[in-house]
Amino acid sequence: MSSILFSALLLLLLHQPLSAAANLHSKKSLFRSQPIFEPTLLLETPPTTYFEVTKPIPFPKTKPFSKLILQHDFAYTYGKPPVLSHYTPPPNFHSQKFSKIVLEWTATSKGRQFDRIFGVWLGGVEILRSCTAEPRATGIIWTVKKDITRYYSLLKSNQTLAVYLGNIVDSKYTGVYHVNVTFHFYPVEENSYVESDKGFGLGADLILPISRNEKLNDGLWFEIENSTNVESKEFEIPRNVYRAVLEVYVSFHENDEFWYGNFPNEYISANNLTGLQGNGPFREVVVKLDDLVIGAVWPFTVIYTGGVNPLLWRPISGIGSFDLPTYDIEVTPFLGLILDGKTHKFEFGVTNALNVWYIDANLHLWLDKKSERTQGKLLKYNASPLSLSLLSKFTGFDGNFVTNVSRSIRSSGYVKSSHGVIKTKSIQEFKYSNVMALGNEGNLQVLDQVIHFNGRVKTKMPSSSLESTKSLKKFRIHLDSNSVDKGNGTYYSVANVTLGLDEKLKKTSDFGIFTSKIKNLQNGHGNMLLKGNLVVSRLGSTQQKYRYSGGKSCYFRNVRSSNYTILHDEESNTCT
Ligand SMILES: *[C@@H]1O[C@H](CO)[C@@H](O)[C@H](O)[C@H]1NC(C)=O
Ligand SMILES: *[C@@H]1O[C@H](CO)[C@@H](O)[C@H](O)[C@H]1NC(C)=O
Ligand SMILES: *[C@@H]1O[C@H](CO)[C@@H](O)[C@H](O)[C@H]1NC(C)=O
Ligand SMILES: *[C@@H]1O[C@H](CO)[C@@H](O)[C@H](O)[C@H]1NC(C)=O
Ligand SMILES: *[C@@H]1O[C@H](CO)[C@@H](O)[C@H](O)[C@H]1NC(C)=O
Ligand SMILES: *[C@@H]1O[C@H](CO)[C@@H](O)[C@H](O)[C@H]1NC(C)=O
Ligand SMILES: *[C@@H]1O[C@H](CO)[C@@H](O)[C@H](O)[C@H]1NC(C)=O
Ligand SMILES: *[C@@H]1O[C@H](CO)[C@@H](O)[C@H](O)[C@H]1NC(C)=O
Image (tube, rainbow, N blue to C red):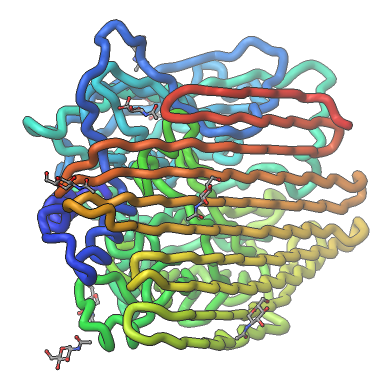
């Protein structure tokens, strides 16, 4: 995805003869993000609207102040510096309070193009990681809306907005992305009361970018190319911080775009399949603070809009593809180590990584307005090493592999501030299981992967009772793909995908209990008929069920599409 190397590799692989072993190569390459060559289309066909299913942002009833921040046509932007624009806050920002600030990305494109990863940064702080939709000859349009109220303190002052979207336009890949980035500021409603904004839910006072800041011809993200590659950033925090959270942005590309389906190295070497993606199917983003592992990210398996079979994602995009999930790591227990006014560093690495992972982060800091110095101490710390069990059985190209991994990271510490002594305890628990079967001379691949995350943060302030946040996440992917030789150089390839993202959140504080739940499930079925190196016909159908409940609000959507057409769409916001 999104590099010259990538399209060249794809073409190279597609031009290889489809012998058994090479078929495995080309089958793998067909999973990868790819554009579609649509032969004939009626030019009167209106542009197709693509979308990702998610709950609508609860807007206040007030009229927003809206401002177009950037308008740009991303044509040949690959290897060029990010596109910049000057952000100034709304004129009344200091007298007016806004209860919701929303970023709106709207783009159109026409022609043929790969899915491209992009990032949006404000003052070096990443505020959106996303992937473009793939255009058609008759044009497409899509909109992503993201609640960026979390970045309130950043939005108070002038900033540089940077967008990197590495696109390539030539005679074959003609899709230019025409993009508008607009911010909407919704003034607070009179007598309003926002459930989730209570207590610690309030935005940070200062957000430090943990991203690249040198002169770039690329995104501001760090690029992790292999398992030993670590990238780091030095930073200093003010001496009166009483709470800190690191928000991590992650995306995976090229040889690790489908990391969960990568093959064990012993299988690759035994079968001389050196062109295949290896290092097995387990990946972990490790975050270190001055050489101490403070947290990890076991990411959701986002499939970009060209992945597996592009028709699966037209027009219903894959879960997380238009607004990639971010991951919060509680840094408060470690504040005692970094409140000394000196320079410290965050470091990122990816266990088993293949080229390439794009990672950066934002450090959200809450400042003690009534004192110039806070003091802290790390009380307890324990990061268990990865516990990994592997079962690997194969004969020739066929076999079974089970990879199970778990680990936990625990810390507790206190911070002395004008609020008194605040004690914070943080636990991250991860469990991973990947079951993979290869059959039909290696042409059949069935995999089932589940990641369970259990995160807890407990805070005790002297003036209030215990506050706690409990976050449970379950990420599931099932991928089932087969390629059958139909004779005469014709191959029939099928791929079924199930993506599941479940989240439960429970916040307890003096204000009460807030719970929310998301169940999001996509089932896709795609097939392709290949003759020689050409895709002769293609079909993709997707079904998605999304259910949210949080406080007193609910949202439900059940939508089904086949080959660009919505066949069923049911939406509701009543709680049952
Ligand atoms: C971007 O905004 C301009 C000015 O409002 C408008 O003419 C154009 O159609 C918009 N483009 C997109 C892709 O929304
Ligand atoms: C912010 O930018 C505006 C427009 O360029 C400028 O007039 C203003 O002086 C800037 N404010 C600060 C504090 O730099
Ligand atoms: C890993 O990547 C880094 C950064 O590009 C490079 O310096 C190093 O040589 C690579 N290591 C291996 C084993 O390929
Ligand atoms: C792999 O390659 C080596 C050396 O070229 C050869 O000896 C071996 O037989 C090959 N194995 C398979 C399974 O093709
Ligand atoms: C791996 O984990 C799964 C699910 O928890 C379990 O059923 C299985 O027995 C484990 N297998 C191994 C080899 O540890
Ligand atoms: C394969 O091609 C030959 C020659 O064009 C034709 O006679 C035969 O029917 C084809 N077989 C199949 C299974 O399509
Ligand atoms: C894929 O899904 C379709 C439709 O649900 C089903 O008929 C087919 O058997 C599945 N294929 C595989 C390889 O699992
Ligand atoms: C799916 O859409 C493509 C492109 O519009 C078309 O060529 C193909 O015939 C369609 N297939 C089905 C089964 O509708």
